[in-house]
Length: 352
Image (cartoon, rainbow, N blue to C red):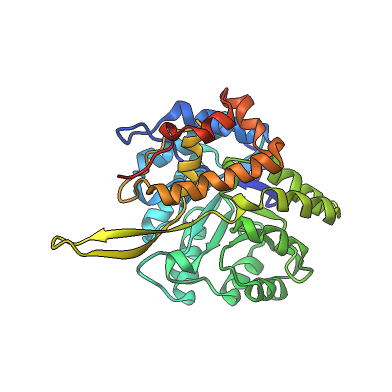
């Protein structure tokens, strides 16, 4: 069974591999979990936003959590994404995760229906805690995607009422002042996990935040580099942590990609537009290009145009040229040659 939840270190927010017809590719998923574990991660996070949780059925959710539990064994933890914009569904998903052996449950703030912080605490988090008492939960605050946010005050009530049941928060507000307020209200017992790869080191460096790790998108690609970075900073080696962060920096900045394009109206007018492609689309494009998983995303997500794909290839190329050791584990685990994959247009999924 997975180890008890320890909110520190690197936790990859696992991408969900699909076949070309949109069904789960479980062989690729198992291989991805093993790749992360080989990189020394603390545990894995199945069925989060990166795993396209809004488009997974509960049956698929249970399959992915149970597979992660089985593959991880006692080598780390499993933090299962169980959040919803429906409290009853969140209760079901959290209870399923408990039953399947997950170490803890990650619950995102309720998206789209936009509850207040008070409602999030009393009608969502507290109801899940009461209904499923045997598993720790980690609130996930990401207002840019959920349209709402559990406030620091309500987070403090949840944590200070039962530190063991709400031991940590995934902070993806991008607001360092808010994170400092979390620490001020909750004290040292709350673990603050970064939800933004590029803010992990600043959050760990800030004495008023003292983040203990990251739930990471790019740990799907470079788990060992991120583990080394976080461990170096945790041990006080600020210089080494900063060096690694600089070397993988092109990837840490690329969770989302903007690209200019053209729309042609039926009457022939050509209009210049900018498209923003959000996680996990750029990540899965890079993983597919490197031969790790297929490129399929559940609709309405889809392939990016060449301009956006080239941004991703450029970031990978920059890391490979400056510090190839960070991408070399992909070659060993997946039996590919990264320079060949970066140069081969045919392996990079692009929209027409």
